[in-house]
Length: 468
Image (cartoon, rainbow, N blue to C red; front, side, top):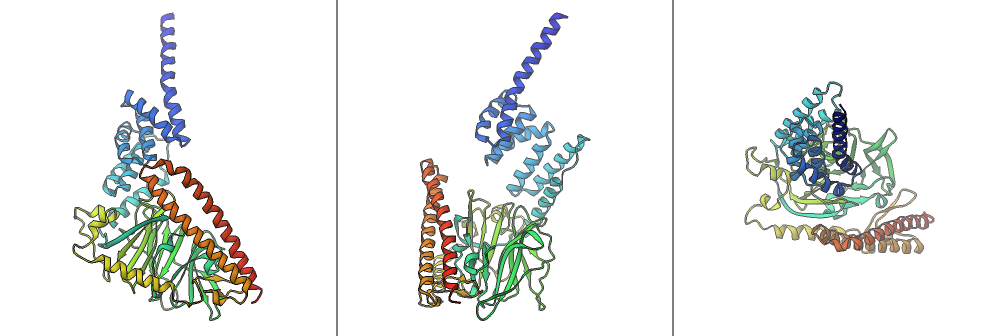
């Protein structure tokens, strides 16, 4: 009996010793210390390759480190051992890779594993993922065939400044420029009679689409929420086509694949808007997709996405829109690639002169930049009386004009810092870790410059508004 007790105690010590490393590695994972957790989990998984708990946390850690392909093998082991969350992650990986049928199969296993534990409730996230898998399957049957001419990865902050619209397409302005203080981006059509933006309204904490009229003297009047009759958690980045009818915008909610998706609606004769429609792929993805803009004068379109961009960045795709939608064949071997927009070269037509098109777009964009007048740089800044100034010659006071010149100088400084940051971040992504300190320093400089800009903008408005 004594020997049995000693053996039991020894066994308990062994079990405790074996459990301790996985508990420590699990804590590192839950604390977000993925690199630190990885080495321990790899060692534990090698010792116990069929242990579902260890396999799951190894797979989850690899996925958190954006190594989804490597995560599949340990997660498959964990799924085979009945770990419900392993099926959830495998479903997400399949969705990330545009394999909706495979995602649905993992979701079914996820549900079965939960139901096996009779005390556990089916989470809402399971149904939401089922809906996304079904939506992706439907979208991949109608992937639009487009020609992507170029792409550019930029800072997410005010990314819309990199869209090269001609005068006829309207203007993409910051909230400060348009005099809408609570907006990140404001769109003003070429007619100059309306403004569109996104901001929290009185009736909702989440951003909603807003619009307002502009009077002849530049005063912004009658701001109001745009009623879409649309179930969305948030809406943003509006762009109205020159027809005054077709409105594109981004929204996240039940009808989105992941985060924000791009939608389209039309304005009726009475000013109301029809039920929005998801524009589908390749514009939308399981990530965030923003601001679809089409310039009919140049024959060019843009949209932005963070689907393959580093943190804090977005990729802007420049494409040639079609008058009539033509879809990729559902059985085409490059269907997934076209849906992801992961290879620009495969979207282009052999022998077509895209350089000439790029040059024409650049020329029209430069022409648009100089349309206001010769009174200096063009911009848009709202005064306290609601009027909007577009050039230095619009200022009535010398103090206000000098303050505006200082504000423009800060804008140039910010643009230079952002350009340097973009270059250094690309080097860092390519493996040059020695630039990390410089990146951090520039980020601090950028933060300070933006604060100085806000103060300079307030000073400009205060000085000039005294004469109005």
